[in-house]
Image 1 (cartoon, rainbow, N blue to C red):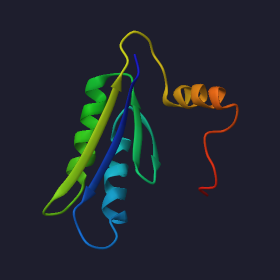
Image 2: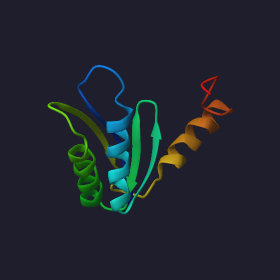
Image 3: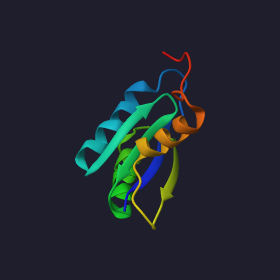
Length: 104
């Protein structure tokens, strides 16, 4: 089984959050997860739900601040294993083209 999640962790501050977000992303390296960061968050894949939750918890705890906002959306498909890139591939097959345009 593969568990996929969208994780967004950020301090509630004025100005750049990049340094603190980098700490959250770096915390994922201590876990058996694959991840890809994008402008809106980080997509995480894990074989086990517990590993994904431990990684998300570590990312949340890695951010310093008086207030930290964390968003976690989980896709726990229990009937079969499906990786995040396979989900994108399915959308691209339906579109007949890549699922991106001009954001470089």
